[in-house]
Amino acid sequence: MDPQGDPATQFNQIQDMASQNMDAIVVWPTSQNALIPAIRDASRAGIPVITSNSPIGEAGRRYILGHTGPDDCALASQAADMLGAALEGEGNIVVVEGTPGYSVSSLRGNCFLDRLADEYPNINVLDSQTAEWNREKAQTVTETFLTKYGDDIDGVYAFDDGMALGVVSALQGAGYSAGDVKVVSCNQFGEGWDAMREGWISGSGKQSPIDDAILAIQTAVRVANGIEIPALQEIERAQITPANVDEFERPTW
Image (cartoon, rainbow, N blue to C red; front, side, top):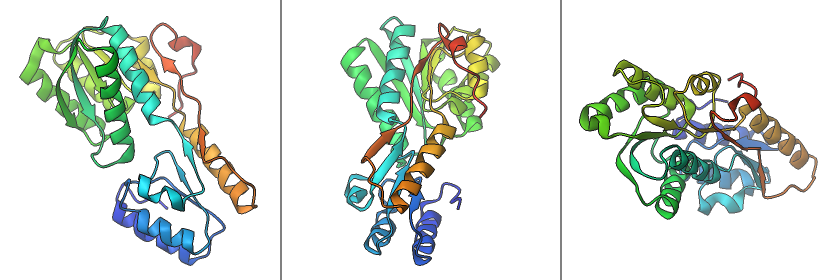
């Protein structure tokens, strides 16, 4: 069931699944905290719940048996490292965020900024705005940044490759050449792989939604059959840069 990113819809969907006495429920949370009561009720009804891709808020973790997916904090930290390396440790950057209140957004923002503060004190964040995981909105946000800060922008951090591609479109529209502004993100898409090979993106992370889905379903099957699972299972991640991009297959998504 697809909530289309709406926590209220997903809340009702979880309740509907719980009422059907499922053997296991996999939830990709659209909100850290809004879904906790529905997940709690499913758990108390004896239905095992696994979260996938995005963790539930701390208060709700007692009600889930396990979590599968990427380590978003680690992905954000490595994005900071890749941007720090591309900028040689200094410069001004802007940030294009995901949807506020979404657990992935929180992790990809806070962990990036923490790493930047710890390791790259000479990199200054000029501005940070949400584009709600939307490529077109990311282009508009970046165009606003370029109007406001112009050539003072040395780098851009986008929370995913979809928004990074919006950033690239804005840079191209403003007459920049590939590499003039260093752009990094967290999870590489197929078009992002192409843009990296063309010099527009300086760093991204491997995060396969196929691996993510397979691990979640395998885990649900184990749980439904009474097999114990680890509290946390991570999918593979890797730093991808122009120096090693050809070592990775072009993503199919």
